[in-house]
Image (cartoon, rainbow, N blue to C red; front, top):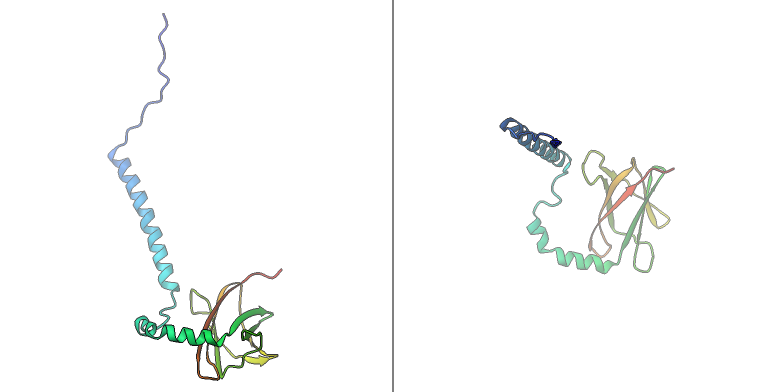
Length: 162
């Protein structure tokens, strides 16, 4: 008669020290990741868009309707250190606003903000810019010849040019 051998591996016990080490590692990782994310969020947030969102919201619909009635369409291109802004009406004719300012920003920080010196060229606008690859936002603010306020943000991404 032969005896069967037990081939199972011994079960390792979960001791208090092992359990404590697992908890400390888990929560330590969670806290470290949260601290890292909170630091990055705070250090890159550029601040408020408006001083009082409630006050700004009270006239939003009227301003939006007036701006949409203008029928302006804006697009942007960047090549060789020059930003070209095309601003046309619904018929494709160039628009000549009474006032127009352009601020080029990064959506995440203010260190590369550039207030652009727009020059009218061939029905559009150009400005020299210092840009690198990545995400950018062009903030247009101005006034139409009839006094209508104009605000428009164009977000675009520059990629490496090969």
